[in-house]
Length: 177
Image (cartoon, rainbow, N blue to C red; front, side, top):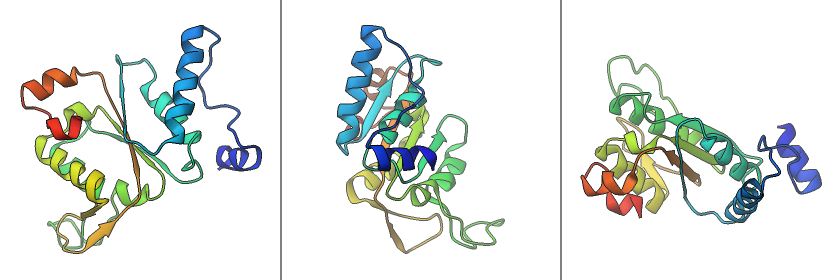
């Protein structure tokens, strides 16, 4: 909240966690600022431990969405079924333990940004659902029939060779492009 308030009052965020005076870091900061002004979906690529989440958070903090949620989801840390439930939520009775409606991360991130870390690990079935959210800005909760409308910016990251995953049909080319 303090970062969002700082941005609202001063027009900028003083500390987004990215530090460095090297020309490469200065170029990265310029790129972040340029990308942050758009509302485009972003794919950040880099090796593990290089700060992809830090870059994603900085894009969010410098964007018009900064006063809304920044939600992080690690796509590699969950099974496909659990990830679907995490992203889209579920309705009461959708499965045995679903005793009440649960909002998914897309709903929680409404008007903000959702960061999908390690998107290359996402199953092709979930990729189809993500594509629909990007195109239609809507989805249904697991076990639901009601369409949920959302306004969410997607920032994704991977350390995978996405072109190779597309070539091997492990990642949808329409989602990648």
